[in-house]
Image 1 (cartoon, rainbow, N blue to C red):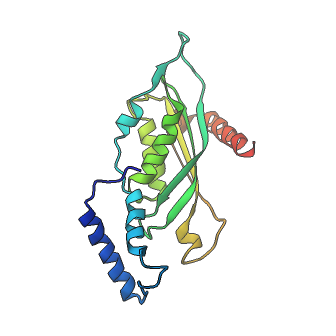
Image 2: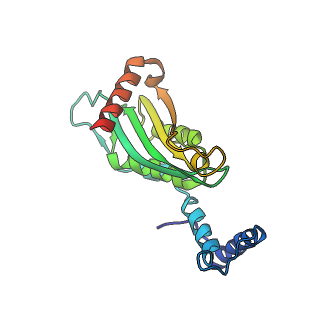
Image 3: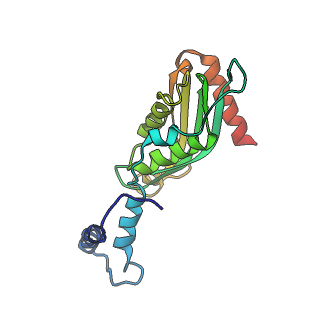
Length: 201
């Protein structure tokens, strides 16, 4: 697992701060269930602090269509596992992303779509809304040159079921569009129809 460069000393310093906070709250860190909790929490956060270069992810595995005219349809990938932690409570946000794009002469290796979703979710704690926009902007960027992009994320939030209102089974849906999807309602309808088929299969 690749995480941000951090020295063992820095990791231990962070764990000490967490330990101090837990002790202030009255948690006995000598209890066998809490002995390594500060260090585990730091490692948990580090999993969501993995910087990446979207251009390096997207610049490989492009291919031109074999036909002279190029592929004119829509490329959709559904049910991509999505995971991040929210910046407000550092609690998990877990769900699925659904991506669609209309090629502008290039198609990307399909694994790249999943890699982008994973990378955006693990780069830093982010709101689901922000992740949705960032993924769309990357796909609509110059490497892919898509004529249109649409991104939808449906996720459950730990801050909903683990604290505060304490309710579960209340997923949050976000979506954003770029290019042709903004003005062509039939394209949006086709995308959501295809993702629904994928969910029901």
